[in-house]
Amino acid sequence: MIAGIILEAYGGIKKLFKNGELIFEEGNQPAYYYQIISGEVKMNNYNDEGKEFIQGIFHQDQCFGEPPLFINQAYPANAVAVTDCEIISITKNKFLELLKNNPEISLKIIKNLSQRLYYKSVMAAEISSQDPEHRILRLIDYSIEQFRFKKEEAGFLINFTRQQLADLTGLRVETVIRAIKSLEKKGCLKIINRKVYR
Image 1 (cartoon, rainbow, N blue to C red):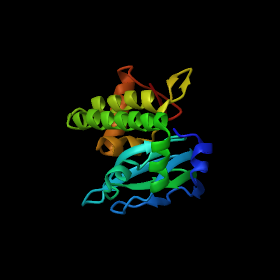
Image 2 (tube, rainbow, N blue to C red):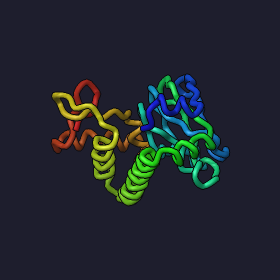
Image 3 (tube, one colour):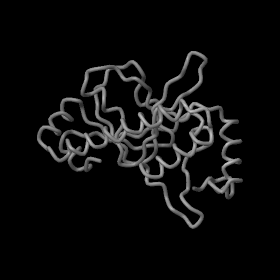
Image 4 (cartoon, one colour):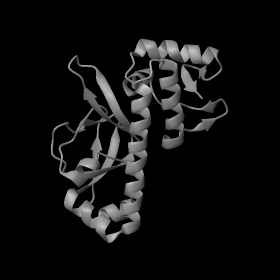
């Protein structure tokens, strides 16, 4: 997203987070811009019954949690390291200064936010669908396009666990497993060594 050398010029600090470690918590006031150097981060919420809902999964070179920086609102979700991660952050004031001084970076941020807003709109409509197979395929197809999933001989490797697919679509993991098996029988997906390919 933003070159590391530019973030460092604006006071960027690199920090390591362990798998499962909380980066920021829902309800906290935003103070930093975060960008992933390596690893994977999820933003999530829990409902009253304790069921997790994943708002998004972010990978190397992607930023996360920046919308509240612009509107002075609390974080609407938690950010949690899914793997061991290295993350670079700069303060909110330095981030806004960086954007003012670099219009081309501002446009990249706007484009990134627009893509995520589009995804939320698409997935909101899909989650209201009663068909789990349709929900899962829509999520997979969108993710292939947005997350640059690796193309292998068998197709695109879907780099989500069954649990992550469930949490991203609002389905139970058992439903996801059944839907994936059904989609494999229909020829929409392949399962090779427990890995899912599209």
